[in-house]
Length: 79
Image 1 (spheres, rainbow, N blue to C red):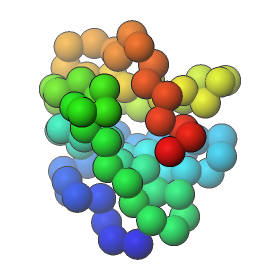
Image 2: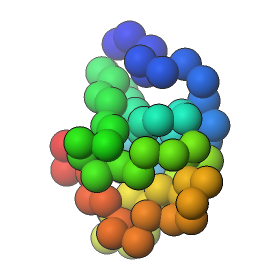
Image 3: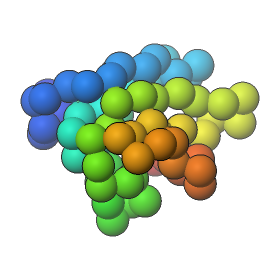
Image 4: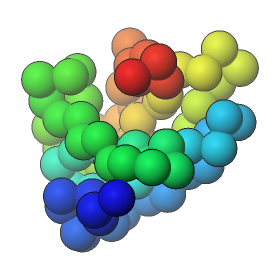
């Protein structure tokens, strides 16, 4: 697959399912081993400098940004 659309990488995270999550200044991208998918503000990702990624036991993605963490724990694991 093609690289993530925003090449300024600020954080990386490998989830339990093997997916690679990549944060940039304005979006989060996911590589499932075959293709990239980008997520941004329209998907609930905070529009700010993204600098941390983590998944919890339920597979929810937590996004840390310049303004703190995303308290909604955006569930993008099923997409």
